Image (cartoon, rainbow, N blue to C red; front, side, top):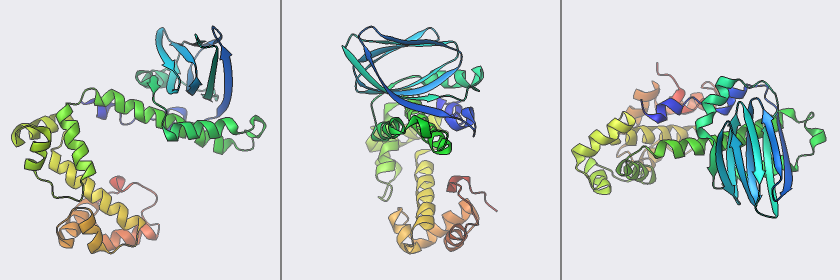
Length: 287
């Protein structure tokens, strides 16, 4: 099983549950100052804006130099050792419900580590840190959603780092080409040139990595994109077909019907009426 499949179902929401509580804040530390050690299960995100810090978690260590964000989980001990900078400033998001399990933290442990600060991560951390602590109880649902969102964003990017490391570079180039040229004409010969491999070898290598061939991935993305546009725009169905790389509206309709058991018009109608709920189209069951 590829790491992508192994990691797919690991999420913050699944591990912390619907009643999770989070606290946010901003702290500054001088050279050599410590935070911790903390015992028991811990889960948090930090955004180091200035300085350096060593993160010691369950006998492991990783280093951060500002600007940097990090995903942190531990089930025995956690300690932050700041310096050698004179002033180290950090925003933090900490899970506070106290109901984490060791097994949950162990599932997250492979993803502990540093990341470059994304716009999403830094914005979420700043919003949380600017909330007054005395209104957490009045905005528990909001702060909970904010904490889950901040940690999910970091976890998603750490997952990507872990899985990409095992994927052949040629396969990554092909996958990126498909995603960036979805509405263009793409053939196996096109992708073979992108990867500098023969079509036959590329097909085998890609399938061994993702359990589908490149063209299956291409059509799966086109159908999903088409379904999204049906749901979220009033664009004519024929125009959506051409925008998503189908040569004819009939071909688009046939693929939508195969995937969802509904015609494009029926799919749009049911989604707009709320009959399909808020599910991602990949989760809609066929008839």
